[in-house]
Length: 321
Image 1 (spheres, rainbow, N blue to C red):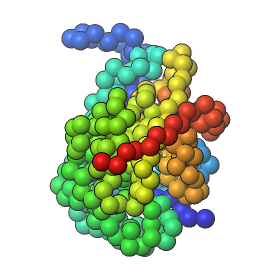
Image 2: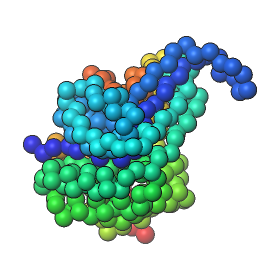
Image 3: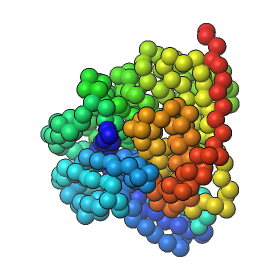
Image 4: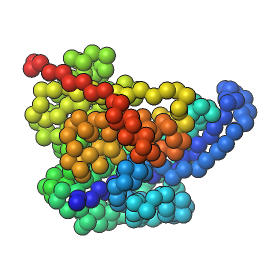
């Protein structure tokens, strides 16, 4: 079977604070605090492992945090970190005790040694084989060019490696131009490139997604938060919409990481050769299951199976313009 790789160039430690006493301008008391190895790629790897698939994480880490990332909590996750003399970024997430997000403060990565990045990419392509899956997600460290992912996607296409891109801004635009197998932006990220992509109008949304798809041979999975996902695929004049609902009382986690969990499901779906509808069901289910656990990306396979069966998938024909 093909292998799944996740490239992590900007990991983070998430300092998770739970409180029911948040007031602006006041000293607040935390009910609990947790330090979690995180970043989009790390969260994605957790989900892949939770779905009983092996995943190989390769990336950059500061010398200050090697111990935190040496074990990501599953025997199915293998890691290869290239360490250097920079400080690993730390994010702060504040939630109430019911899991609802109060605030998420995301730090910018420091500049890293570009020679390390070249070593990682060379090492990565020494391991990748035809038919493997490569996940490229998250922000780039300060100083790396915006076409870093784009160059990797171009090289992956030549090697027969399937790619999933989850990024924003110029990094997303340049990466999509090289035709990843799947692009998975969220609505805010996609909206910066296509301001008219209104999720309330299926026609307008489909038009924007098809325009973004261009002459690619891939798919776009646009995550829409509580509204699920909208999907288009090259060669298909079809818009798929998938959605599932969960009870607020079931929530233990916050929205942070739900998109990463969806990416993990898509990676497993590509590896297993699932249909578009099959990947929608598993992706939406994993995104929702992330809300049922306090650690981003750490979903329960039992929850995923239950939510996948409950996911509603609707297909509509896209009119040619």
